[in-house]
Amino acid sequence: MGEETPGASSLVVLSLEPWSTVRRRIRILVDELVERDPGLRVLYVAPAVDIPHELRHGHRDALTAAPLEQVHPRVHVLRPRKWLPRVVGPWADRSLGRQVDRAVTDLGLVDPLVWVNDAGYAGYALGTGWPTVYDITDDWLLAPMAPRQAARLRSDDALLLERSGAVVVCSPDLARTRGGRREVDLIPNGVDVDLFSTPQSRPAELPPSPVAVYVGTLHEERVDIPLLLEVARSRPALQVAVVGPDSLGVDSHEALAAEPSVHLLGPVAYDRVPAFLQHADVVVIPHQVNRFTESLDPIKAYECLAAGRPTVSTPVAGFRDLGDPVVVVGRDHFVAAVGEALDSGPRPPVAPGSGVPTWRQRADAMAGVMARVRTAGSGS
Image (cartoon, rainbow, N blue to C red; front, side, top):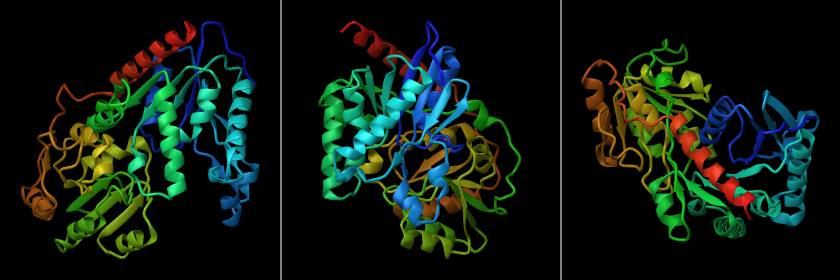
């Protein structure tokens, strides 16, 4: 299918994030790295397709969809097929690894660097002998899961910490927890300042003012659902627009869906996100403050700074020290702070300062780490 040209470099990304129009950290950094290096070729391995699950739900197209897709002249996305859960034993992992190997061969990639975000690929990545970077974006060790799954994740995480050429973390808390075991590289998130600060038209899906907007994945460990409902019920005319993927349990989803003033708009393409922030009367960040959220570096914090709209956040990591236009308050005062922001009336956006970090800067830092690991690997 392909053959690597002389002087080209290759990268295999084993990601927890799907490749979609909802661009998250890994996808954004891959785009930036490809743009900065015209010789780079990428195999992006997205989360596997759970074939038994898809068939149970009548999605027979899962069997016929091509697992390997070209999304850019130098980027291919692989969605491996998973026939059995990983907990059943090594056969499932070996099957996933063989599918990655086959794609690497078909694309003609030679001695790629492996960027591991999905720790479940620890054995595969380290077994290839290729230089490896372990990138930790969330501390899933703190998330609730079955004991067997948790034990497996701890084992995979420990293996990658011990044997990877470099470990990258995105938040100070992850630097503290992982940096006690080995040297780590702290590369936080960033923002496309031009995209988020350039005015866009009001989205048709956005309910009329006054409207509070939350942008981000709805996740049980992250969003304080009762607090979001309190905001929605705080004023008769207030509408709450929730923009992003829904990963909630049934009870939480139904509680939000049953509230007349809450509008679950679902995920939108990355380049449309700024419009929802820019036309919010107030942006709300009703996050829980817990060990899991303390490990995060929320991308939306940088996006709120670039969009410049009034923002009210709980005292969660990533927002505590931002300053205007972000107001940080405790849970008990959150609804009142939202009301104060609404009562202050329309205000022009706050221009982002020169210190707002860009994704290009973060990609430069990641490229530096990868170059260091490649050099060390070639000399071993």
